[in-house]
Length: 304
Image (tube, rainbow, N blue to C red):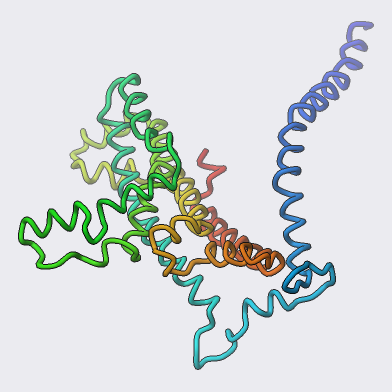
């Protein structure tokens, strides 16, 4: 009888200890998240409602920063600058997402199903990470000697008599910006898709082949549906990074192409911090809507 009472008293104590332990384990992550994400975000939101002039920030509530962003958007005769900029940035996102998805899926499929040994998979992953050992700026600048007017690509095309004069659109154009984005961020698509593919039961592929399915049918009906979680996560990575990127657009676009991140960077350079903060909040809202749409299309938590 005494042992039963002891067990009844010990059970709530054990539950409390587990709860305390769980809270203690979550505390470092919670503090880090709050300190480096929540607090800066709240400060950015507050500053976005402040006024400013040529030489100082005025902590007085105003909506003119947001009004300036949407200035002219109510007119049907001309599209406002904000809409044009977001449309340009979204086009970059769509093109980069499509190219990185095709490349990422293909490379991940090769690594997951055609590379048999874990050691070789590790080696190939290390090869993929080699470009990350240096700065993004250096990786972008390395394209200039290749794509420039007197670069290797134009010289090769002219030597082969494929073109009569150098191609101007290879550098400082939308093409060069998309190329640099793909070069920089394809790896962010490869990794989550590869992780999703490695969880696929190989017996499902064998059953599909035994049932007479071709290679393309196996990919379409088995591999692709079971990899949608990795595709969604990779898409979130690529889209969110491209939406806020300003360095790639500036370097590879020759300071001639507008993007949302570039506008924020320019406003920050001119010390227009409230205006930049307002643009950052709008950009965050747009990115969150995109992420929400992707998570609605694929229930990541359920799939994981």
